[in-house]
Amino acid sequence: MSKLKREIITNNFIWGVLLVSNNFYAYRYFIVPTEQQMTMNQLFISDKRELLVNFFELLKTQKKAEGSYWSKNYILYLTKELANGLFLCKFAKQKNITIYEPGSSDIEDTPENTYPFIYIVVDLNSQILFFQEKQSIFPNRATSKNSFCQLINSFIEDYDYLVTIDEITYEQNFWKELDSHESIYELELTMKSPNLFGSLVEAEELLKEINKTYNNTETTLKVKNDKGKLRVVRDKIQSFIKYISAGGGKWVLGVTGKGSKRVVKIKSTHSVRTVQLHVIDDNLDLQLVINEITVIDEIIKNVNDGTTRGKNHDENQN
Image 1 (cartoon, rainbow, N blue to C red):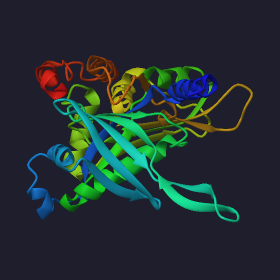
Image 2 (cartoon, rainbow, N blue to C red):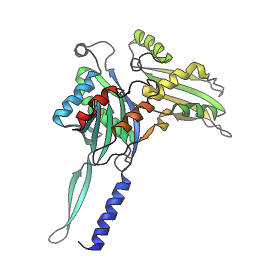
Image 3 (cartoon, one colour):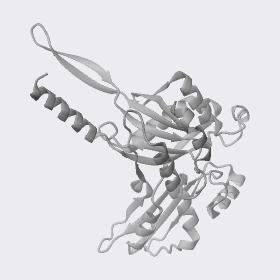
């Protein structure tokens, strides 16, 4: 191999490594019933969380699951079980390309499918997901979330349950936005049904009462003031903002800034949390992942103490 060719290959390799993003978006999933009344299919499920456990048990055997979203095919591969209930996956998206090759009398084009992928970390214990940021594959991060959700739901919808996924966000961003705008016109809080956080926040108690009465899957609280004089008292809504920021829903603020009369809506989904995870040859630091999950879960500080995972870590690496 010539020196020039070797340098070109080396430079291309280095450039390719630099293009691999270490940023991962953080989400939390919920499992909600599709029907308001209990169905026969749901009666066979003693714990709805087992639906995802069973799905990944099946994935261990079959190695991959396929689905479609907006006429594109997607494939989920179980790359590695990092520890008990903690998985590293590859999520591939169909991409149509054209190969141009020299023919006998002209250049010939051949359509082909390729499947570029992102890494996804799935934690069944805390219901947390990390999606790798890779804009060359998913320019809109909502597409990666929604297509993954659609694939999972195609496997569990027969039990009359669906998975929903919400962004884990920065709690302080809500208060920062609230303090930085002169006029507040609207506040909307949408929260998933309770039982994820085990009554560790005040919001959980109210949501349980509402759920007991209406059997709803989510609750929306909306308050408005047409004059921009909405009064938002921190002590009254702090538990709701904590609930939402931990992945339990969404918030929307309708505000105007200095010198402007136009009402704009600022959404919690605009400030999704990101973590730094370094994946090299399908390997990543288990302790780093556990640490990130522990830090990111602001409501249940002891959910990822590593006791169970540490016990299974060595055997899963073999």
